[in-house]
Picture 1: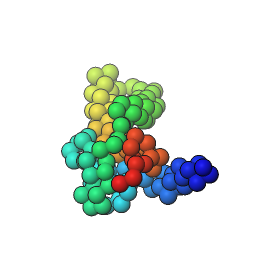
Picture 2: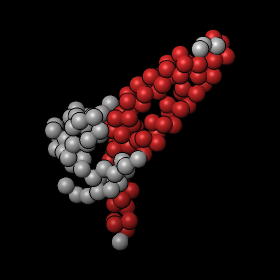
Picture 3: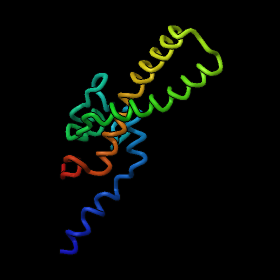
Length: 133
């Protein structure tokens, strides 16, 4: 009985969180860090092409989109305020510049934050990532 109680804790210790998050952010396999995590812009591969790690267990859902909105909003809102107070640009110019900036930053961050969420799930053995191979 004590062996079973220690198994989940021991199982979670062999997958460090920070490297898995960093590999996911770089859109790499959270296990080996070599294989590509994404098949297309946001589609996660079923298996890593290098190490064979099953990746189909992920349940990223809306988490990456919420994180993207959070990060973009917290970066662009102060910049919007500073630009308005310092330079007083024409409203149409400012709206155009910040709209392009927000869209560009969102498109850049969304797949990276999806990889980060998949890396966290892999490291924490969530949603089937902890099952025996």
